[in-house]
Length: 246
Picture (tube, rainbow, N blue to C red):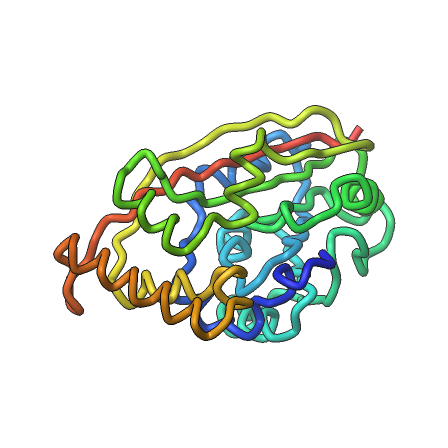
C-alpha cells in the first residue's frame, strides 16, 4: 500500500467512521463459509476504523486481529471494537507468523495492494485450506442521482478496480468466487458529507477542489429535497470475493 492516497485516511478517521457503511453480515459470513470446521483465527487487514472487524467479532469462537498501516485509524478501531488486538502492517508485509491464520479478509482495501506480493504474503500467514476474503461496498450507480453524486466526488480506486473486471489474486490462492448483495442505507445530509470527506481523492485534493465538491453536493441535495433534518436511501451493492489457499 504505497500510494499516498492509500495512507491518507488517518487524517479523516472521524469522517470515515461517520460516513462509511457497515458490511452486511450475510456477505461477511459468505466469505468465510468455506473454512474448515473449527477454523476461527482471522486477520482483518486494512482494517481502518473497524467497519469489517465488527462483523467478524460476532462470529462464534472467532479470534480476530486487526492490521492497518495507519496508527490513527487503529486508534479509532480500538475505541469502536475494544479488545481486538491491533498491529501496524500491510497485506504485503504482515506482522504475523507463518501459517498462523485460517483467513485474511480485506474490506475496501485490496485495490491498494500489489496483488502478486500481497497474495504471496497473505499465503504465507494463511494455512492450506484457509481463505482470502475481499469485500467492497459500492454505491449503486444504476440510480441516476447516485451517478451524479459520483461525478461530483470522482470515482474511487475501488470503483475503478471493480469496473475494470474485479480484483486480481495470485498464487498460492485458487480462483476467486464472487457474490453480491444489494441493500440501502439511510443517510442524512451530514453523513453524506462525511462519506465524501473520507474518500482518498477528497482527502488529498486542494482546498478549492474540496470546496467545489461540498458546494455541488449541497446543490444536488437541494435538488433532491434533502434538508438539514431529512434523509435519503443511498443504494449500495456489496461485492464479496473469496479464494482458497492451495
